[in-house]
Image 1 (cartoon, rainbow, N blue to C red):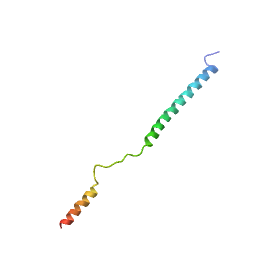
Image 2: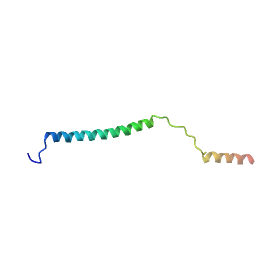
Image 3: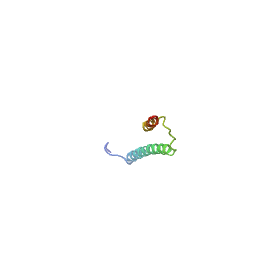
Length: 69
């Protein structure tokens, strides 16, 4: 038996290692997807901007100017 020949036990070990590596990759994907599902399952929080658009401020200014004429 030379060094180039592979026993059935060696092939089995190699295939087992490959299978475990594939399972680890799939578990990583599952972990990422479950975190995303948890984040997206929550409702969007209410948002109230702390500023007003300039269009509203400008409209109020125009109204004040038109009243003073």
